[in-house]
Every structure is written in C-alpha cells, then in structure tokens.
Amino acid sequence: MYQVVGIVLGVLFIALGVVAFLSGGGPIIAAIAAIGGLAVLITSIITMVRS
Image (cartoon, rainbow, N blue to C red; front, side, top):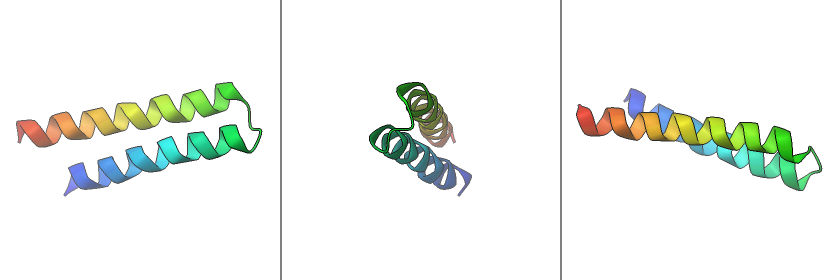
C-alpha cells in the first residue's frame, strides 16, 4: 500500500516539475521537483520489489 502511494507521489512530483518548467518557474525548481519525484519513485519500486 505504501509503495503505491510512493509511486503516485513520485509521478505527481515529476508532473509538478514539468508544469513548473513550462509555466516559467525556472529550470532549477523544475529539476529539484523532477529529481525528488524520481527519487521517491525509485525508492518505492525498490521497496515493492523487496517485499
């Protein structure tokens, strides 16, 4: 269950990063959101595979 929430949050952060970049929020803010989203996504997938 927690892994699914993590995956959803990861995708949400990546989407927010893309939206921030496209709306002129700046590449640094977009990169931080995208990297955070990827980190959450990867962690959730690894946790799901291990359990």
